[in-house]
Image (cartoon, rainbow, N blue to C red; front, side, top):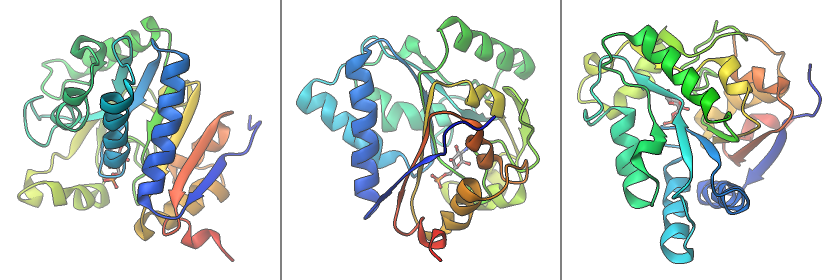
Length: 248
Ligand code: GLP
């Protein structure tokens, strides 16, 4: 199944990761102004979003025809909850560029029928023609989006239970650990791998084991990011700290 190895770009620090990845996104948007983006939350892509906002404000990078789908959302959080991923995307990115809010899809964590919400989301991706460029982060346990270890290659957008590790890692954004939702809605591995091009960002030593396993380890459900070895156009853009375990 694997055709082309994952491309690896090692940057000197996280600001170079932000610059390089923003340049890739900006080039793609200039070439195809009505492209479909897959977007990610977490602390890692924040500086990339800042750089894209700068390119929008200073160089007129135009998002008016761009459509976006976000990877995941906490189950049980309202879109206007300050820890919801909708809130994060609006405040970190969408409110500062000229994307049409109606073109931005984030799963609704408060949906009365979450299964139906997941189906609607998959259908919306299909209707849009599919994701052209998908941004990913990586969890310290190798998860992508909220596809935790054990997720299958065929998984699609669905409700998942978060692992204790992810709950602990993400608790830094919440007042109390007990406030972190223990379930989420997430695009599946199969949904992600259908994107035409994938860019994964990782910074900091805490990600170095996951990065090593994803790039060089066996393709296994134990490390969901290792499934990316099955994609024909995937690039990891990481800083030196995240590359530490790749040496020797
Ligand atoms: C969350 C998100 C992932 C993200 C990960 C890493 O679990 N669901 O999509 O990649 O966090 O986050 P950070 O970039 O803050 O390390």
